[in-house]
Length: 371
Image 1 (cartoon, one colour):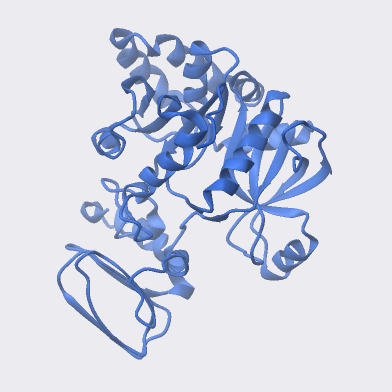
Image 2: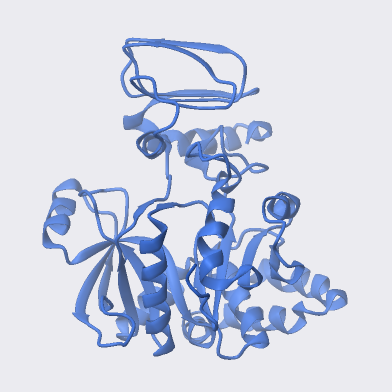
Protein backbone atom coordinates (compact mmCIF):
# COMPACT_ATOMS: atom_id res chain seq x y z
CA UNK A 1 0.00 0.00 0.00
CA UNK A 2 1.32 3.50 -0.80
CA UNK A 3 1.98 5.80 2.13
CA UNK A 4 -0.61 8.42 3.07
CA UNK A 5 0.28 12.06 2.32
CA UNK A 6 1.01 13.60 5.75
CA UNK A 7 -0.19 17.19 5.15
CA UNK A 8 -3.22 16.27 3.04
CA UNK A 9 -6.91 16.21 4.03
CA UNK A 10 -9.66 15.05 1.66
CA UNK A 11 -13.07 16.74 1.65
CA UNK A 12 -16.09 14.93 0.19
CA UNK A 13 -19.03 17.23 -0.58
CA UNK A 14 -22.05 14.92 -0.39
CA UNK A 15 -25.03 17.01 -1.43
CA UNK A 16 -27.49 17.44 -4.27
CA UNK A 17 -30.24 15.04 -5.23
CA UNK A 18 -29.07 14.21 -8.76
CA UNK A 19 -32.34 15.34 -10.33
CA UNK A 20 -31.49 13.85 -13.74
CA UNK A 21 -31.55 10.43 -12.08
CA UNK A 22 -35.11 10.79 -10.72
CA UNK A 23 -37.04 8.76 -9.62
CA UNK A 24 -34.09 6.64 -8.48
CA UNK A 25 -32.33 9.58 -6.82
CA UNK A 26 -34.50 11.49 -4.33
CA UNK A 27 -34.07 14.13 -1.65
CA UNK A 28 -34.02 11.43 1.02
CA UNK A 29 -31.92 9.00 -1.06
CA UNK A 30 -29.59 11.06 -3.26
CA UNK A 31 -27.32 9.72 -5.96
CA UNK A 32 -24.29 9.21 -3.74
CA UNK A 33 -26.23 6.78 -1.50
CA UNK A 34 -26.95 4.38 -4.38
CA UNK A 35 -24.99 1.55 -5.95
CA UNK A 36 -25.06 2.66 -9.58
CA UNK A 37 -22.39 0.35 -10.96
CA UNK A 38 -23.39 -3.03 -9.55
CA UNK A 39 -20.33 -3.05 -7.29
CA UNK A 40 -22.35 -3.88 -4.21
CA UNK A 41 -21.67 -0.59 -2.46
CA UNK A 42 -22.67 3.06 -2.79
CA UNK A 43 -20.82 5.75 -4.70
CA UNK A 44 -20.04 7.44 -1.37
CA UNK A 45 -18.39 4.28 -0.06
CA UNK A 46 -16.44 3.93 -3.31
CA UNK A 47 -15.22 7.52 -2.91
CA UNK A 48 -14.10 6.91 0.69
CA UNK A 49 -12.17 3.78 -0.25
CA UNK A 50 -10.49 5.59 -3.12
CA UNK A 51 -9.29 8.40 -0.86
CA UNK A 52 -8.36 6.52 2.32
CA UNK A 53 -5.00 5.25 0.97
CA UNK A 54 -4.02 8.85 0.19
CA UNK A 55 -5.02 10.34 3.53
CA UNK A 56 -5.63 7.65 6.09
CA UNK A 57 -9.16 7.16 7.49
CA UNK A 58 -8.78 9.93 10.08
CA UNK A 59 -8.18 12.66 7.49
CA UNK A 60 -11.33 12.57 5.38
CA UNK A 61 -14.13 15.07 6.04
CA UNK A 62 -17.63 14.76 4.60
CA UNK A 63 -19.86 17.80 4.11
CA UNK A 64 -23.50 16.78 3.90
CA UNK A 65 -27.02 17.86 4.83
CA UNK A 66 -28.39 17.33 8.30
CA UNK A 67 -31.01 14.97 6.89
CA UNK A 68 -28.32 12.65 5.51
CA UNK A 69 -26.13 12.38 8.59
CA UNK A 70 -27.39 8.97 9.72
CA UNK A 71 -27.10 7.47 6.22
CA UNK A 72 -23.59 8.88 5.71
CA UNK A 73 -22.38 7.58 9.06
CA UNK A 74 -23.92 4.16 8.34
CA UNK A 75 -22.00 4.04 5.06
CA UNK A 76 -18.78 5.30 6.66
CA UNK A 77 -18.59 3.82 10.16
CA UNK A 78 -14.89 4.73 10.34
CA UNK A 79 -15.47 8.46 10.05
CA UNK A 80 -14.62 10.55 13.10
CA UNK A 81 -17.47 12.65 14.48
CA UNK A 82 -15.49 15.89 14.14
CA UNK A 83 -15.01 15.15 10.41
CA UNK A 84 -18.76 15.20 9.66
CA UNK A 85 -19.67 18.76 8.65
CA UNK A 86 -23.42 19.33 8.45
CA UNK A 87 -25.16 21.91 6.27
CA UNK A 88 -28.54 23.18 7.45
CA UNK A 89 -29.50 23.73 3.78
CA UNK A 90 -27.65 23.57 0.43
CA UNK A 91 -25.59 26.70 -0.34
CA UNK A 92 -23.54 25.35 -3.29
CA UNK A 93 -19.93 24.20 -3.41
CA UNK A 94 -18.05 27.33 -2.26
CA UNK A 95 -19.83 27.34 1.08
CA UNK A 96 -19.47 23.57 1.55
CA UNK A 97 -15.81 23.28 0.61
CA UNK A 98 -14.89 26.66 2.07
CA UNK A 99 -16.38 25.76 5.45
CA UNK A 100 -14.43 22.50 5.56
CA UNK A 101 -11.23 24.37 4.65
CA UNK A 102 -11.89 27.03 7.29
CA UNK A 103 -12.40 24.36 9.97
CA UNK A 104 -9.33 22.36 8.95
CA UNK A 105 -6.96 25.33 8.70
CA UNK A 106 -7.71 26.14 12.33
CA UNK A 107 -6.57 22.63 13.22
CA UNK A 108 -3.54 22.64 10.90
CA UNK A 109 -2.43 26.01 9.48
CA UNK A 110 -0.45 24.45 6.59
CA UNK A 111 -2.98 21.77 5.64
CA UNK A 112 -3.62 20.98 1.99
CA UNK A 113 -7.24 20.15 1.18
CA UNK A 114 -8.64 18.32 -1.80
CA UNK A 115 -12.31 18.29 -2.79
CA UNK A 116 -13.73 15.16 -4.44
CA UNK A 117 -17.43 14.69 -5.20
CA UNK A 118 -19.21 11.81 -3.49
CA UNK A 119 -21.08 10.70 -6.60
CA UNK A 120 -18.48 10.21 -9.32
CA UNK A 121 -17.33 6.88 -10.73
CA UNK A 122 -13.56 6.46 -11.06
CA UNK A 123 -11.77 3.36 -12.25
CA UNK A 124 -8.03 2.50 -12.38
CA UNK A 125 -7.32 3.75 -8.84
CA UNK A 126 -3.52 3.79 -9.12
CA UNK A 127 -3.80 6.41 -11.87
CA UNK A 128 -6.14 8.46 -9.68
CA UNK A 129 -3.62 8.14 -6.83
CA UNK A 130 -0.81 9.41 -9.09
CA UNK A 131 -2.83 12.42 -10.26
CA UNK A 132 -3.73 13.42 -6.68
CA UNK A 133 -0.11 13.13 -5.52
CA UNK A 134 0.98 15.40 -8.36
CA UNK A 135 -1.77 17.89 -7.50
CA UNK A 136 -0.68 17.98 -3.84
CA UNK A 137 2.90 18.73 -4.92
CA UNK A 138 1.58 21.61 -7.03
CA UNK A 139 -0.58 22.90 -4.16
CA UNK A 140 2.46 23.04 -1.87
CA UNK A 141 3.88 25.67 -4.24
CA UNK A 142 0.89 27.95 -3.60
CA UNK A 143 -1.23 27.12 -6.64
CA UNK A 144 -4.83 26.04 -6.71
CA UNK A 145 -4.71 22.80 -8.67
CA UNK A 146 -7.45 20.92 -10.46
CA UNK A 147 -7.42 17.45 -11.98
CA UNK A 148 -8.68 17.49 -15.55
CA UNK A 149 -9.73 14.29 -17.24
CA UNK A 150 -8.02 13.30 -20.48
CA UNK A 151 -11.00 13.08 -22.87
CA UNK A 152 -11.84 9.69 -24.31
CA UNK A 153 -14.30 11.15 -26.83
CA UNK A 154 -15.50 14.57 -28.07
CA UNK A 155 -18.14 14.89 -25.35
CA UNK A 156 -20.58 17.82 -25.28
CA UNK A 157 -21.84 17.19 -21.73
CA UNK A 158 -18.77 18.47 -19.86
CA UNK A 159 -16.99 21.77 -19.44
CA UNK A 160 -13.39 21.87 -20.58
CA UNK A 161 -10.08 23.18 -19.24
CA UNK A 162 -7.49 24.55 -21.67
CA UNK A 163 -3.88 23.88 -20.71
CA UNK A 164 -1.07 26.40 -21.23
CA UNK A 165 2.65 26.01 -20.50
CA UNK A 166 4.05 23.22 -18.36
CA UNK A 167 5.09 23.87 -14.77
CA UNK A 168 8.46 22.72 -13.46
CA UNK A 169 7.55 21.28 -10.06
CA UNK A 170 9.22 18.30 -8.41
CA UNK A 171 6.77 15.44 -8.03
CA UNK A 172 4.38 16.83 -10.65
CA UNK A 173 5.85 16.20 -14.11
CA UNK A 174 2.52 16.60 -15.91
CA UNK A 175 1.34 19.81 -14.23
CA UNK A 176 0.51 22.81 -16.41
CA UNK A 177 -0.91 26.30 -16.00
CA UNK A 178 -4.59 26.66 -16.87
CA UNK A 179 -5.20 29.12 -19.67
CA UNK A 180 -9.00 29.14 -19.43
CA UNK A 181 -12.21 27.31 -18.63
CA UNK A 182 -14.59 26.60 -21.49
CA UNK A 183 -18.32 25.97 -21.14
CA UNK A 184 -19.95 22.87 -22.63
CA UNK A 185 -19.24 23.05 -26.38
CA UNK A 186 -21.26 22.01 -29.41
CA UNK A 187 -20.22 18.80 -31.16
CA UNK A 188 -18.01 20.40 -33.82
CA UNK A 189 -16.12 22.38 -31.18
CA UNK A 190 -15.80 19.31 -28.96
CA UNK A 191 -14.23 17.45 -31.88
CA UNK A 192 -11.67 20.26 -32.24
CA UNK A 193 -10.88 20.11 -28.52
CA UNK A 194 -10.49 16.34 -28.64
CA UNK A 195 -8.12 16.51 -31.60
CA UNK A 196 -5.94 19.27 -30.11
CA UNK A 197 -5.11 17.38 -26.86
CA UNK A 198 -4.77 20.75 -25.12
CA UNK A 199 -8.19 20.43 -23.51
CA UNK A 200 -9.27 18.34 -20.52
CA UNK A 201 -12.70 17.67 -19.06
CA UNK A 202 -13.49 19.69 -15.95
CA UNK A 203 -14.24 17.11 -13.25
CA UNK A 204 -14.60 19.61 -10.40
CA UNK A 205 -11.69 18.29 -8.33
CA UNK A 206 -9.69 21.01 -6.57
CA UNK A 207 -6.57 20.68 -4.42
CA UNK A 208 -5.04 23.64 -2.60
CA UNK A 209 -3.50 24.82 0.60
CA UNK A 210 -6.49 25.70 2.75
CA UNK A 211 -5.21 29.23 3.37
CA UNK A 212 -4.75 29.80 -0.37
CA UNK A 213 -8.27 28.56 -1.12
CA UNK A 214 -9.75 30.80 1.56
CA UNK A 215 -7.71 33.73 0.28
CA UNK A 216 -9.31 33.36 -3.14
CA UNK A 217 -12.78 33.28 -1.56
CA UNK A 218 -11.92 36.39 0.49
CA UNK A 219 -11.07 38.29 -2.70
CA UNK A 220 -14.01 37.20 -4.81
CA UNK A 221 -16.71 36.78 -2.14
CA UNK A 222 -15.77 38.81 0.95
CA UNK A 223 -19.17 38.48 2.66
CA UNK A 224 -19.14 34.71 2.15
CA UNK A 225 -15.59 34.53 3.47
CA UNK A 226 -16.52 36.49 6.60
CA UNK A 227 -19.41 34.12 7.24
CA UNK A 228 -17.17 31.09 6.86
CA UNK A 229 -14.72 32.54 9.37
CA UNK A 230 -17.54 33.11 11.87
CA UNK A 231 -18.71 29.54 11.43
CA UNK A 232 -15.25 28.01 11.74
CA UNK A 233 -14.45 30.02 14.86
CA UNK A 234 -17.51 28.58 16.62
CA UNK A 235 -17.47 25.12 15.06
CA UNK A 236 -15.60 23.11 17.69
CA UNK A 237 -17.79 24.49 20.51
CA UNK A 238 -21.01 22.45 20.34
CA UNK A 239 -22.92 24.96 22.46
CA UNK A 240 -22.04 27.86 20.16
CA UNK A 241 -22.12 26.06 16.83
CA UNK A 242 -25.90 25.67 16.42
CA UNK A 243 -26.87 29.32 16.99
CA UNK A 244 -24.04 30.56 14.74
CA UNK A 245 -24.99 28.15 11.95
CA UNK A 246 -28.66 29.18 12.18
CA UNK A 247 -27.68 32.86 12.01
CA UNK A 248 -24.91 32.77 9.38
CA UNK A 249 -25.52 29.84 7.04
CA UNK A 250 -28.74 31.15 5.39
CA UNK A 251 -26.96 34.43 4.55
CA UNK A 252 -24.15 32.82 2.55
CA UNK A 253 -24.14 33.44 -1.19
CA UNK A 254 -24.84 30.40 -3.36
CA UNK A 255 -21.95 30.14 -5.80
CA UNK A 256 -19.99 27.28 -7.28
CA UNK A 257 -16.30 27.03 -6.45
CA UNK A 258 -15.52 27.14 -10.17
CA UNK A 259 -16.63 30.78 -10.19
CA UNK A 260 -15.44 31.92 -6.74
CA UNK A 261 -12.00 30.27 -6.79
CA UNK A 262 -11.00 28.50 -10.00
CA UNK A 263 -11.76 31.18 -12.60
CA UNK A 264 -10.31 34.10 -10.57
CA UNK A 265 -7.18 32.04 -9.86
CA UNK A 266 -6.86 31.18 -13.55
CA UNK A 267 -7.10 34.87 -14.47
CA UNK A 268 -4.10 35.52 -12.19
CA UNK A 269 -2.07 32.60 -13.50
CA UNK A 270 -2.41 30.79 -10.17
CA UNK A 271 -4.53 27.84 -11.30
CA UNK A 272 -2.78 24.67 -12.39
CA UNK A 273 -4.04 21.40 -13.81
CA UNK A 274 -2.83 17.83 -13.68
CA UNK A 275 -4.25 15.44 -16.29
CA UNK A 276 -6.09 12.40 -14.98
CA UNK A 277 -5.64 9.32 -17.15
CA UNK A 278 -8.16 7.23 -15.21
CA UNK A 279 -11.70 6.35 -16.31
CA UNK A 280 -14.12 8.94 -14.89
CA UNK A 281 -17.81 9.68 -15.14
CA UNK A 282 -20.07 11.98 -13.13
CA UNK A 283 -23.09 9.74 -13.84
CA UNK A 284 -25.03 12.80 -14.88
CA UNK A 285 -28.02 11.00 -16.38
CA UNK A 286 -29.38 7.59 -17.28
CA UNK A 287 -27.63 7.61 -20.65
CA UNK A 288 -24.24 7.79 -18.95
CA UNK A 289 -25.37 5.19 -16.41
CA UNK A 290 -26.26 2.81 -19.25
CA UNK A 291 -22.78 3.23 -20.76
CA UNK A 292 -21.08 2.74 -17.41
CA UNK A 293 -22.88 -0.31 -16.25
CA UNK A 294 -21.51 -3.60 -17.42
CA UNK A 295 -23.28 -5.80 -14.86
CA UNK A 296 -26.53 -7.66 -15.44
CA UNK A 297 -26.42 -7.19 -19.20
CA UNK A 298 -28.68 -9.18 -21.45
CA UNK A 299 -27.63 -8.43 -24.99
CA UNK A 300 -27.49 -4.61 -25.09
CA UNK A 301 -29.73 -4.05 -22.07
CA UNK A 302 -28.18 -2.97 -18.76
CA UNK A 303 -30.14 -3.98 -15.67
CA UNK A 304 -29.81 -2.58 -12.15
CA UNK A 305 -31.78 -3.90 -9.21
CA UNK A 306 -31.17 -6.84 -6.88
CA UNK A 307 -34.64 -8.30 -7.52
CA UNK A 308 -35.19 -7.08 -11.07
CA UNK A 309 -37.47 -9.30 -13.19
CA UNK A 310 -36.79 -8.33 -16.79
CA UNK A 311 -37.80 -10.01 -20.04
CA UNK A 312 -36.32 -8.54 -23.19
CA UNK A 313 -36.38 -9.30 -26.89
CA UNK A 314 -34.32 -7.17 -29.27
CA UNK A 315 -34.20 -4.35 -26.71
CA UNK A 316 -31.34 -2.05 -25.71
CA UNK A 317 -30.82 0.63 -23.06
CA UNK A 318 -31.14 0.42 -19.29
CA UNK A 319 -33.70 -0.75 -16.74
CA UNK A 320 -33.48 0.20 -13.07
CA UNK A 321 -35.96 -1.74 -10.96
CA UNK A 322 -36.73 -1.31 -7.26
CA UNK A 323 -39.90 -3.44 -7.38
CA UNK A 324 -40.80 -7.07 -8.02
CA UNK A 325 -42.84 -6.20 -11.11
CA UNK A 326 -42.07 -8.06 -14.31
CA UNK A 327 -40.89 -5.60 -16.95
CA UNK A 328 -41.05 -6.82 -20.53
CA UNK A 329 -39.32 -4.94 -23.36
CA UNK A 330 -39.76 -5.93 -27.00
CA UNK A 331 -38.06 -4.27 -29.94
CA UNK A 332 -37.25 -0.95 -28.27
CA UNK A 333 -33.88 0.75 -28.70
CA UNK A 334 -31.99 2.90 -26.20
CA UNK A 335 -34.87 2.71 -23.74
CA UNK A 336 -34.65 4.00 -20.17
CA UNK A 337 -37.06 2.47 -17.65
CA UNK A 338 -36.88 3.32 -13.94
CA UNK A 339 -39.47 1.51 -11.84
CA UNK A 340 -39.96 2.45 -8.17
CA UNK A 341 -42.80 1.91 -5.73
CA UNK A 342 -44.39 5.31 -6.33
CA UNK A 343 -43.09 6.51 -9.69
CA UNK A 344 -42.27 5.16 -13.14
CA UNK A 345 -40.00 6.86 -15.67
CA UNK A 346 -39.88 5.85 -19.32
CA UNK A 347 -37.69 7.77 -21.76
CA UNK A 348 -34.77 7.20 -24.13
CA UNK A 349 -31.05 7.80 -23.84
CA UNK A 350 -31.39 10.68 -26.30
CA UNK A 351 -33.76 12.51 -23.97
CA UNK A 352 -32.19 11.49 -20.65
CA UNK A 353 -31.01 15.05 -19.89
CA UNK A 354 -34.65 16.21 -19.91
CA UNK A 355 -35.52 14.25 -16.77
CA UNK A 356 -34.60 17.32 -14.71
CA UNK A 357 -37.52 19.08 -16.39
CA UNK A 358 -39.87 16.45 -15.00
CA UNK A 359 -38.55 17.16 -11.51
CA UNK A 360 -39.11 20.89 -12.00
CA UNK A 361 -42.65 20.24 -13.25
CA UNK A 362 -43.46 18.05 -10.24
CA UNK A 363 -42.30 20.82 -7.92
CA UNK A 364 -44.45 23.40 -9.67
CA UNK A 365 -47.50 21.15 -9.68
CA UNK A 366 -47.27 20.48 -5.93
CA UNK A 367 -46.33 16.82 -6.32
CA UNK A 368 -43.17 17.08 -4.28
CA UNK A 369 -44.07 13.96 -2.31
CA UNK A 370 -42.35 11.85 -5.00
CA UNK A 371 -39.18 13.94 -5.00
